[in-house]
Image (tube, rainbow, N blue to C red):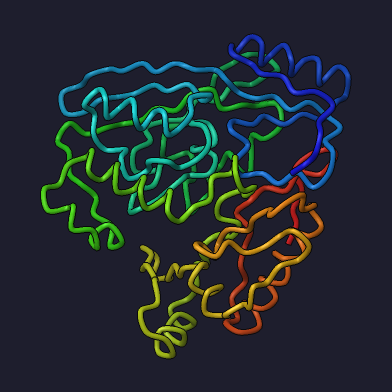
Length: 326
């Protein structure tokens, strides 16, 4: 999106993060901490300071049956996946090419192809920017759920994630997700093979944001009651769905949008990506009003046809900060 901020500051140390936070506080300036900025939609020019987290570093401890990684939050997630493979630590390969940084991976509880961050997370370290005190949240206190965590709802202002503890089992067991099974290349399975297949699938399905503006999946996959799911499953064949531990059913939002059969829907320069209907794209100089109008149209149509509300996965930022929309 063609928007500006009052200032953009790249921070490489915890101390510089604290310093810029103090300036924002004293000057009563809004601020937002971003990693790669891959899951946000700025609706207008930002009147505060965008702090880009580049606090990096990876520490590895070996235990009897596991490797324990202490990864600083400014590391790029995909770079971490590649690094672990190079080091012979297998287990993150299903999350290859997930955009964003390690800090935002914890906020969002990223997930793909049968693996979520919560499955490998040991702890999350946050810092109080007021007093510099580091607080460690053990995994069970992070309230991880589908694309969410305690850090998405609390500890937004005056706190920042600085590191994530990741646990990798030495006894590697592949996670074979149904869409990976379609590949014949999985006959002789290895972590590298899964990594390559996931990368191929993602590159094929997802547009490169440097070439075609997008924020990845715009909506979350809805989690619905068994009764509501039963109605859809009895009306359609091959509905992508996943039974949740609480008896609810997660259903593919992309499938719902596909089944509505939108006819080349485009509002201004905002459109649905043909290869993956869950992604909204900026064809050329789209503004936020066009993207929001397109998102609202999709929501309205899916609600009318399937009685399912599609919740946005993207964070909306106005001139002063994050707001709830749609």
